[in-house]
Structure formats: structure tokens, C-alpha cells
Amino acid sequence: MNDIDTSQLLTQLRTMAAQSQGRLSPSTTGASSTDFSGLLKNAVNQVNETQQTARQLASAFETGNSKADLSEVMVALQKASVSFQAMTQVRNKLVSAYQDIMNMQV
Image (cartoon, rainbow, N blue to C red):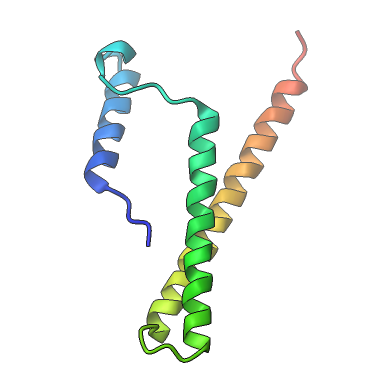
């Protein structure tokens, strides 16, 4: 399964919080700048991997594989469902923001 590195995530959040408060400039953080499309692509890939893992576990359980536990399968399916719903909500917000920008008069 995909596990999130919590220490790296906390470090990124703290760095972003410091940048937003003006304590650090973006050039002094040492983090490489990543574009939005790359972040979005990585998020979509993670959702896809979660769904594929859940599908593999479900099919292994259906075929009677002893390594696939029912609770593990159910948790994987729920993770896949929640991640897909979250990605759908992010997509909806992005489309809404795009439409708002396109409706602005210059």
C-alpha cells in the first residue's frame, strides 16, 4: 500500500506555513519548486495505485488466496473509495475556480 511519510509531510506543512507568514522566502527553503500539474498528476497516480491495490486484494480474496484477509480487503476498498471521492471533489473545485476565472471581466 501507499504510506504517506508523515515527517516529510509535516516538514512541508511547516515550511509552507512559514512562507505564508513571511518568515522564509521561497528561495531559502531548500525545497525544489514543483509545478501544479506535477502535483496533480502525482495525486491522480496515487489514487490509481490505491484502486489497483484494492482491486488486486479483492480478486485474491475472491479466488481463495489465504494471504487476503476480509478485513484487509474491506479497508483497502474503503481507502480506494475515499481517495477517489476526494480526488473528485478536488476536480470539482478546480473546475469551479476555472469557470470563475473565465467569467471575470478584464
